[in-house]
Image 1 (cartoon, rainbow, N blue to C red):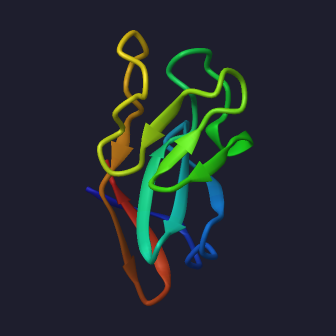
Image 2: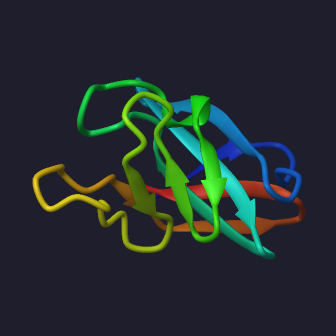
Length: 98
Protein backbone atom coordinates (compact mmCIF):
# COMPACT_ATOMS: atom_id res chain seq x y z
CA UNK A 1 0.00 0.00 0.00
CA UNK A 2 1.40 3.39 -1.03
CA UNK A 3 0.85 6.26 1.42
CA UNK A 4 1.38 9.96 0.73
CA UNK A 5 3.91 11.43 3.18
CA UNK A 6 4.95 14.79 1.70
CA UNK A 7 3.40 17.40 -0.58
CA UNK A 8 6.76 18.39 -2.07
CA UNK A 9 10.07 16.79 -2.92
CA UNK A 10 12.79 17.50 -0.31
CA UNK A 11 15.63 19.75 -1.39
CA UNK A 12 18.82 17.96 -2.36
CA UNK A 13 20.86 16.94 0.67
CA UNK A 14 18.11 17.55 3.24
CA UNK A 15 16.12 15.12 5.40
CA UNK A 16 12.43 15.85 6.01
CA UNK A 17 10.49 14.09 8.77
CA UNK A 18 6.92 12.84 8.36
CA UNK A 19 4.64 10.69 10.50
CA UNK A 20 2.77 7.79 8.93
CA UNK A 21 0.53 5.52 10.98
CA UNK A 22 2.32 6.55 14.20
CA UNK A 23 5.74 5.89 12.64
CA UNK A 24 8.27 8.66 12.26
CA UNK A 25 10.05 8.39 8.93
CA UNK A 26 12.37 10.66 7.00
CA UNK A 27 12.58 11.29 3.28
CA UNK A 28 15.72 12.61 1.64
CA UNK A 29 16.88 13.53 -1.83
CA UNK A 30 20.52 12.48 -2.09
CA UNK A 31 22.44 12.75 -5.36
CA UNK A 32 19.15 12.98 -7.26
CA UNK A 33 17.62 9.85 -5.70
CA UNK A 34 14.78 9.71 -3.17
CA UNK A 35 15.16 7.57 -0.05
CA UNK A 36 12.85 6.92 2.90
CA UNK A 37 13.62 5.28 6.24
CA UNK A 38 12.46 5.07 9.82
CA UNK A 39 13.59 8.22 11.63
CA UNK A 40 15.27 6.53 14.56
CA UNK A 41 18.67 5.08 15.17
CA UNK A 42 18.30 1.36 15.93
CA UNK A 43 21.08 1.70 18.52
CA UNK A 44 19.80 4.40 20.89
CA UNK A 45 16.40 5.42 19.48
CA UNK A 46 17.48 8.98 18.57
CA UNK A 47 16.10 10.72 15.48
CA UNK A 48 18.41 10.28 12.52
CA UNK A 49 17.35 13.67 11.15
CA UNK A 50 19.47 15.16 13.94
CA UNK A 51 22.48 13.66 12.15
CA UNK A 52 23.81 14.32 8.68
CA UNK A 53 24.21 12.79 5.25
CA UNK A 54 27.69 11.56 4.32
CA UNK A 55 27.85 10.17 0.80
CA UNK A 56 25.09 7.59 0.53
CA UNK A 57 24.78 7.16 4.30
CA UNK A 58 22.96 8.89 7.15
CA UNK A 59 25.14 9.40 10.21
CA UNK A 60 23.64 9.33 13.70
CA UNK A 61 24.50 12.39 15.79
CA UNK A 62 24.79 10.44 19.06
CA UNK A 63 27.51 7.83 18.50
CA UNK A 64 28.43 8.41 14.85
CA UNK A 65 27.10 5.11 13.51
CA UNK A 66 25.99 5.36 9.90
CA UNK A 67 23.40 3.58 7.81
CA UNK A 68 23.23 2.97 4.07
CA UNK A 69 20.29 4.87 2.55
CA UNK A 70 19.61 2.12 0.00
CA UNK A 71 19.85 -1.02 2.13
CA UNK A 72 19.65 0.31 5.70
CA UNK A 73 22.83 -1.63 6.54
CA UNK A 74 24.65 -0.40 9.65
CA UNK A 75 28.32 0.56 9.71
CA UNK A 76 28.74 -1.66 12.78
CA UNK A 77 28.21 -5.42 12.97
CA UNK A 78 26.66 -5.23 16.44
CA UNK A 79 24.14 -2.46 15.59
CA UNK A 80 20.82 -3.34 13.95
CA UNK A 81 20.10 -2.09 10.45
CA UNK A 82 17.88 0.93 9.77
CA UNK A 83 14.43 0.16 8.34
CA UNK A 84 14.00 1.53 4.81
CA UNK A 85 10.89 2.01 2.69
CA UNK A 86 10.23 2.03 -1.03
CA UNK A 87 9.59 5.62 -2.09
CA UNK A 88 8.21 7.26 -5.22
CA UNK A 89 7.34 10.69 -6.52
CA UNK A 90 4.14 11.54 -8.39
CA UNK A 91 3.46 15.14 -9.42
CA UNK A 92 5.95 16.39 -6.79
CA UNK A 93 4.12 14.47 -4.02
CA UNK A 94 6.08 11.81 -2.17
CA UNK A 95 4.72 8.36 -1.31
CA UNK A 96 6.19 5.46 0.64
CA UNK A 97 5.17 1.84 0.54
CA UNK A 98 4.08 0.28 3.83
